Each structure stands twice: as structure tokens, then as C-alpha cells.
Image (cartoon, rainbow, N blue to C red; front, side, top):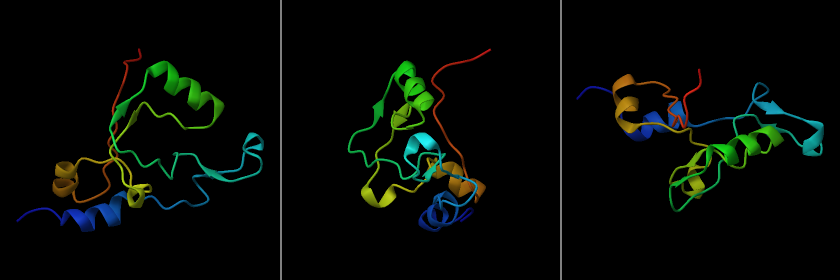
Length: 105
């Protein structure tokens, strides 16, 4: 069989570990460091698609609370980056996979 074991691939390549690069300490966040990529992500029982306007408004405030979409996610998966299992298996490395909600020119 080609590719990698799915569970190994998710743990090795898709698990986000906050570090000095992604942690920010903005004044508006009351001095608390937070991840600029929005980790830990919320656990979600149902996949959701938010409006582009809601997502942009949330991003501008620096809260990152409303992403354009929410994927099914268990509590133990809050630090797992979005990925496509087929691409992960074939590529055998980090897969940064995201939904594009609008085209910009």
C-alpha cells in the first residue's frame, strides 16, 4: 500500500503546536497570548457555513471566533488543522486544506 497510516499522518503533520511564531500578545486581548491561526478550535457537532461578512467582521476584531466554516470536530481534535484524508495519505506530509468562500480579483 502506498502513502502513510492516516492516524500517524494526522498526529505527525496536522496537529498544531503553538510556538513563538503563532502566539501573539495584542493589547486588545488583555495581555493573553493567543494563536494567530485560531487554535484551539471549537468542538463542533454539526458542520456549519457562516456568511463571508460574519467571518470578515470577526477577523477584523482579532477574535477569530467565526471562521467561514466549522468542520465536525471533537474536543480531542481542537488542535488538528483542517485536512483531506486522501490528500494526506497520498502526499505523506502537511496538507493545509481550506474552503474558499469568495473570489477576489
